Length: 188
Image (cartoon, rainbow, N blue to C red; front, side, top):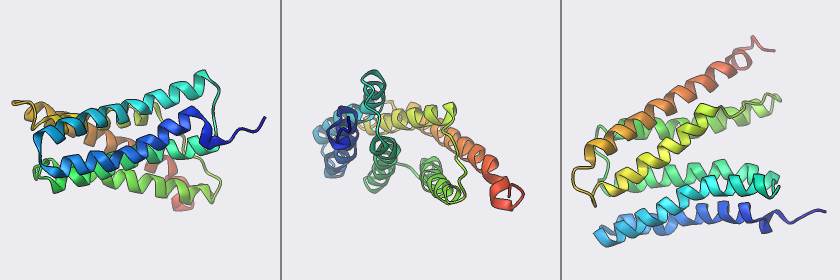
């Protein structure tokens, strides 16, 4: 039976995660502490939905090409746009911008690399560490959001953001290294 992928619950959750960034960013940019708390709650729900949609897809056998395509995009949209909003709202210090920039660079570079290699029928599989990288990024940004709401959280927030940045660079390097034979002409 051919099911409409837009009607599969995991895909609905993934699409909701993509659209959740709009109110989250609006609330963050408002500058109001209550709005920031609501943004944090929405963000936590959106970030948790990354696990929920995958779990439901496996449990209910609701896999689809649409879901496989949208899930990583949803993560990148949530992380990338929130980093931009946090930078705009002065929630990221100059030092915080180092791991934030590394995260943004990798999140653009690796999909571009995958697209290029896809034309050569080379597949870069998602590594277990890359899945953890996404989780740490999501957790780090939750801490950055909570920083203005919970006094004394800044050091922990910065530390987790740097861990996310290091994991992001490391996994990006792993993908680049794995693809190098195909980029250098050695793997032809």
